[in-house]
Length: 144
Image (tube, rainbow, N blue to C red; front, side, top):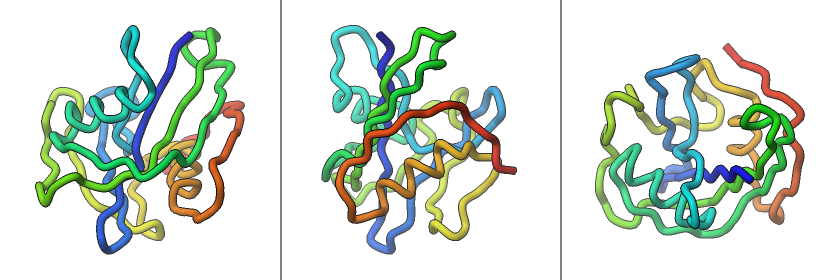
């Protein structure tokens, strides 16, 4: 069963690190991606942060676990979202310019577009002080 993992990475000012994909909708997203065989959700999130923005993370907790029945051609899968911060005072960079074409730090009230409503949901869940969210993703809508 597919597994996805991503991190809502915040800086000292409370801004969120976002990446812009160079494919598909060319959308803004939190760093993350699909898991590899025999890789945990945490390992996936840490690997994806290194691959996409060249940073190591300190994971502070899990913000949410979401079931998406239509993901991966209807096979379905879980998405794990972690709260994290940079492990060192290192500036994120475009580690793979073929996959990620831009990155930046954004406040919640100034998120870039296009972005899916699911990405916004994960950001909001990670920025809340509430408990871990367990949810279902019944579809995605593009916010432009």
